Image 1 (cartoon, rainbow, N blue to C red):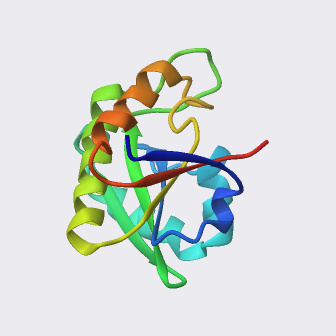
Image 2: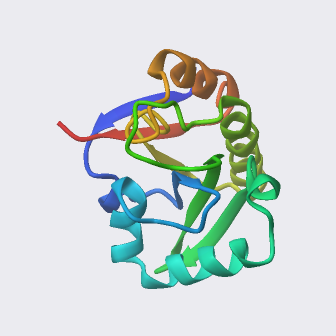
Length: 150
């Protein structure tokens, strides 16, 4: 398995690509997305541009890489909508598709990858049992670091 979990802040990650799950509604209003939006102002404008002329369903499962301060942020379109209910917003098939795109891009370009521990399982209410296995499968042949805040 090429998944490594470390205690640390994703916003301070040294990896070449910092990924996070986003919704397909052009909203980065909370969670990791909001933190990254605040740290990298061009991230949100690039995200809006990417979403602008596409139907939300068309975005699901895609990956957007945005250059920010000498690295990339990967917007992983793994949820169609968002909300505050107990509904599972993470679309597992879409998340897996986008994660594989991320892994393939990183592998082709020799770039390191960081993701938040519990990606898709916080506000999007996904199951870590499912997502954790998905990460192990997607990154079985390439290193990914998961940042977990204690």
